[in-house]
Length: 139
Image (cartoon, rainbow, N blue to C red; front, side, top):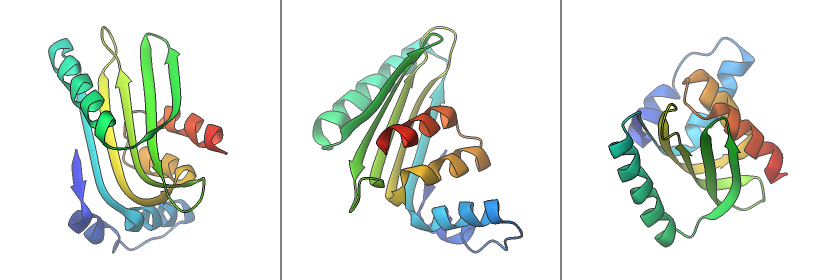
């Protein structure tokens, strides 16, 4: 899944009926780019990990949290904005080598970490539960 600023602009013009959907639309307006790559291939997972590691060396992101549970390793990195909870960029890598899927997700914009759970639920993105844990950690 790759969504850019133009697509976000179109999505943000949706007619809204309820509060939760309005939160979703408000978050979309704050995003510049969203990329999600998912694979269950060990070969592709290795390539994704190498790409993420290479990017981490140049992007000046700080590690927000690490989780190891149920056969998967989750790493979440951020570039902070004006406040501690404001995020300019988020990179999440879920290493699911073996039975779990491997996921690489990148978000850029100017958003609050707490808002991401709405996005992951509405778009049914992998790693939503891990992002909820991260928002509690960042406070």
